[in-house]
Image 1 (cartoon, helix red, strand yellow):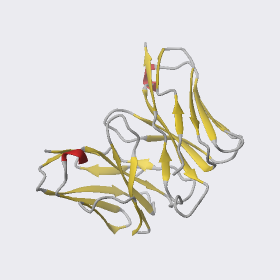
Image 2: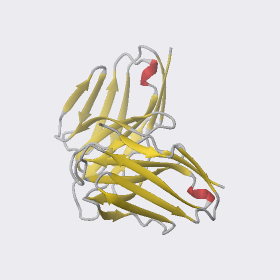
Image 3: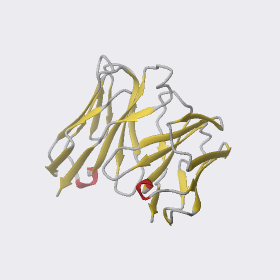
Length: 114
Length: 115
């Protein structure tokens, strides 16, 4: 299995809703990442988990809450989002953090906040 | 924060032509990666280069890492419509504590190859 699987592919949520994005990989990668990508922009790093511990939080607002229940799963819990949070949310993994390993990205979750 | 500058921002060519995309920085990178992204999908890794002066070939794609590890280029020979996409360079910096583990992306080059 050489994929990163993200669910759901599309999500529409109201500003008072609570929802979660899910990411799964079975490549034995020990680093997992959340990125946010707006239209016609490059991906922006949000969080990095290394060996299931949060290593980097790029000053992301607390309405985004990451969770890594085990080495294969990464979640992003969403609460009280704003319309400007609408974007493509990408999960990625790599063998290790801080090495010259390529990232494997999922197809993303297209989030629309209404 | 290290800045990766890509040029050109947009490139439209005919099938069969060659093209080159550039990625430049004032900072030294321990490695540099190239990705291609299609609309509504995640980026797909094309190559990782780690050694200054390194050249890697992937069929019609040639990747070069500058001797000083501050720049890279992607050259496509005889482009095909299937090469259409957003090409992103991304660098892992040489390691201040603050930047360790962060992959910095360039703004991307949108390539359109028409039949």
